[in-house]
Length: 268
Image (cartoon, rainbow, N blue to C red):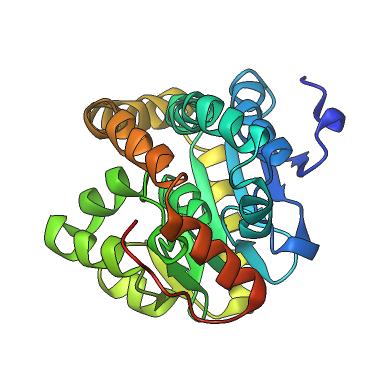
């Protein structure tokens, strides 16, 4: 069994063949800093090798699933040597995160207990079965901070709801709730907030107790299609995202977020 105690921002609890993985920065609405991002890249490798785990339940600590990237940290990094290095190393980590999620044999059940924004929405939507709170807000909000939806949003949204609707959501950073997401097929189920974990756990336990290899290989067969789309789109969207990290519009959006005021974009 892998040693999960070394993880700081991801908590793993295993019982009855189900591993419950909790994004664990509740004070920051589970926004991903570089350390948490690294843990999210690696955790899937450890889980894939854990013979005691037949299903994975993924959720967030506190009132959010994940607010996505840490915008305050983005604002602090803009124009610095750290920011430059981050744009050089982030694409490989972002690709690893998505690829490792798709390579896990065990089914991943997303329990979207609260808001899932930006990268948080991407991680939620790459789960195999998604149970969302009816009131959880879901959106890819990259454009709201002046950057491209490059970490997987440009891959998964069109696959789930079609290119036309996906482009509107990605270009406008449009927010919907869990109930609306279920109606359009973005998530599998929308339930009251207090029913999210029980419903997700019920599905996870059913899969954990089911025909292990039939379930795993059915998942991996469908994921071949998802991987084709990742290979087609992800590198280009990540490259565009890294370019936008160096624009004045991104700096203005990050500043406005920190100052809690509307941004004034100049197209540069």
